[in-house]
Image (cartoon, rainbow, N blue to C red):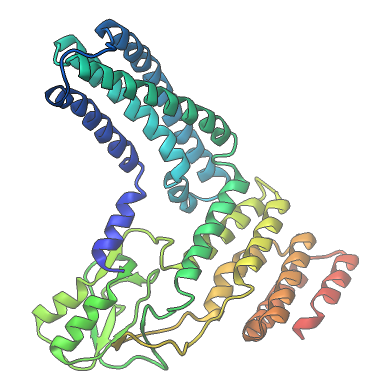
Amino acid sequence: MSQIAFELRQILHRMWFLPAAFSLLAVITVLIAYLLAGFAPEELPFTMPSNGVEAILTILASSLLTVSVFALSTIVAALASASVSTTPRAVPLIVGDRSAQTSISVFIGAFLFSIVGIIGLNAGVYSQAGRLFLFGVTLLVVLLVIMALIRWIGQISAIGRVSQTIDKVEHATVQAFDLLADKPHFGCRPLKGAPKGHAITTASLGYVQHFDASRLQRLAEEHDVTIAVNARPGAFASPNRPLMLVSRELEDEAVSALVDCFTIGGSRTFESDPRFGLVVLSEIASRALSTGVNDSGTAIDVLGTLVRILHHRRFGPSAEDAHYDRIYVEPIDPVDVFEDAFRPIARDGAGTIEVVLRMLVGLRTLAAGNPALTPVAAATARDVTERARLALTAPSDLLALEQAATFAH
């Protein structure tokens, strides 16, 4: 994905994009009704009086303003609830929910359509054909509003709930893993061993959200160098951590062009960074295990989600055909993946036997179902067991712990 495509995808998921697009479409529709006068006869067998269309548009304008404000306030309340009950890192997924955005966009777009239509009717700019076309579009808008209202009733009962938030994070994480399933190195060569070369850093502080591999390849060919990318999406970029290492020293202009291939922001994104989804899921479980919440059921639900996500995943160097043969990218380390997913839950749930047993069962499932994950799953299970031994005191709990952890030894 190029940087332009990445930036466009980020814009498409912004909360304001769909309402703005629907509003623009509403204005264009009203303008079409005005321009239609030049292509239609003045005398029509069926006409629509101006006050009849205006009455319908007035009802829409007065009611949809209230509905739009109510819908937006519901979204704000859901975002606040998700931040408190799950984690603030999951809020962008709720903001980017297409179904909720579509409903709000229909309300705002229909409101703007009504306002512009009323202004045009009072100004007398519509012919008979224009009023007839405007009336037909108004009936279509009424139908869209009714459908959006029915759908919104179903959405407000689930939006911002813990279970729905977990499902959204799971979906985003699976999408990120699937995106990298065929090209875990983004079409580049896998980096084996420690990278070597001249380090290129950036003065910007933030997380690497994306890098343009095709542009890096063109620059590498232009300057006849090879590039080892040292910061995958999700890595924290700073002046003391190289973004990449090149095979020879380059001029400042070339270095600046290489750095511009990386998009650095203040937060991590779910696209191209599946580890971030695992971090968010573990945060939800840790919040549920806090003394103020004490909801072990949510933590167990998250553990089941983590096992589903990781069960069939493959990590490490891949034999994929490198489309960008001058670029090397380090593979995802399964040890880092399991630390992101299970270490926070092992720490915060060590004193809850139900959570510990469910975690050990999940790790045993991963070890048995994916031989590539057996060593790291066993090592994680031993860490979970040691933490639980220090936190549990009841003999029956300790006995159940030892029985569940036998596979790790």
